Length: 449
Image (cartoon, rainbow, N blue to C red; front, side, top):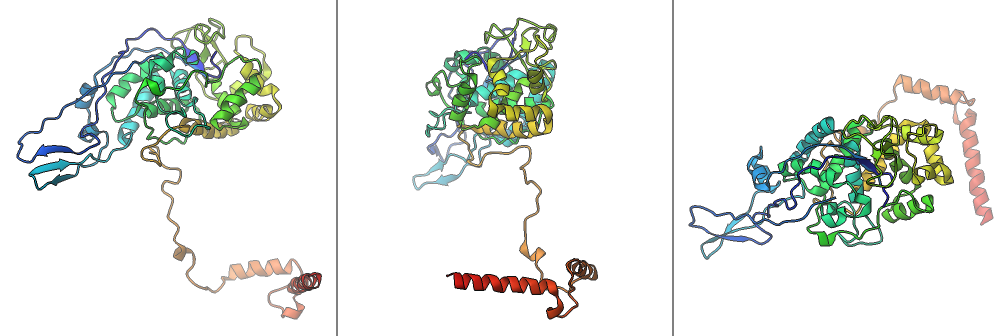
C-alpha cells in the first residue's frame, strides 16, 4: 500500500544477518531416553535458518550488530532463561534401566526477559529516536488479521510473519527492514521473547515513551515458523484510495474494528514522517524534518513529530501549514460524518483521545494472535492488581443498632416529605401514600385480568 497512517523514517543501511541462528527446543516434544548409568549427557543443538527483510509510516536511524543465539544463550544473566522459562523436567526410570525425561512446561515468552527487553527498548528509543517505525512495525504485523478466517496462522495478525522477506517485500511494508535491524540485537539478547511479542512490546513502549497513554498490553504471542505462513499481499490499508472513508472501513472492519477505533488509531500519525521514496507520499524534507532528529528528511503530520499528543487532529482541522502532511485517508476523518464526530472530539479533548487510543492499540495488538498461556502474560501489573478479594462476611456481620447519626439522617428525610419515623403508622402520610398506591396497583391488576 502507499502507506497510510504508517509513519516513516529513513535509516542508513545496517548490517543484518540474512539467516540468524535459531535455537531448537531442548528436549523436544517427545520424551528423550537417556541411559541411567551415563555420567555425562550430550546435548545437541540444531539450527534452522530463515530470511529477514522488510497503516502508519515512521522512521529512525541506528546501528546494530548480530550475535548468534548460542552466544546470547551462554551470556544469559539467569540460567533459568536458558530454557525459555521452561519448568523443571520430570524424570522417570523405566523397568529397562533407562530414565525417561519428559518435555518441561514452557510458555511462549519469559516474563522476566520481557521486562528486561522493555528497558532495552527504552534505551534504544532514547538514542535512535525510532518511535514511529517501531509503532509501524507492530501495527503492520497485526494489521493483516481477517476476522472471517478462524484458523491460525491463516487468519493473519500479530504472529511475527513480518520478519520474513516475502512479507517485507509487500509494498505497504517498505522500509520496515530497518525496524527489524533495530530490534534484532534485543531479540538475540533475550531468546526467551518471541518476535511477535517483541514487535508489539516495542510499539506500545514507543507510544508511552513519546508521552502517550500507557497501553494495557498482554504478551505470550506465538511466532509463525516459516515464510509459507505469511499472509497474501493487500490486507493493509492504502493511503490514497479512490474512496478513502470506504476503504478504511473495508480494511478495518475486516479486522473487527469500528469507526471510533479507526479514528483513534489514525491519531498515531501525531508521530513520524512520510517519505516519498517509501510510500510515494510527502515532501523530501520540510522545515520540521530537515535537521532530524534521526536521519533528516520526509514530511511529518505534526510539527513536533516525536511527541504523542492530539495535535494531529488539531492540525488537520486547521489545515494552515503546507509543511504538514495530510493524506487522503487523513482528510477523510474530518469529511466523513461518522468519523468527524470522533475527530472533532479528539481535537478538543486529548484525555478522551488517549483513553480511546490506548484501548484501540491494545485491541489491534492482540488481533489474530495465539497466546501461550491462553490468558496471556501481563508484565506491568494487572488492571486489578492489589485489589482486595471480596469477602461477604466482612460486609455482613448481622443486624446492628442504628447509630444516632443515621437515625437523624432518616428522620430528616421523612420530615422532608411531611412524615416522621416517630409518628404512628396512621399519621405517617408518606407510608400511607405508599400503601394506598400499592393497594390500587394490586386491585387494578386483578380487575384488569
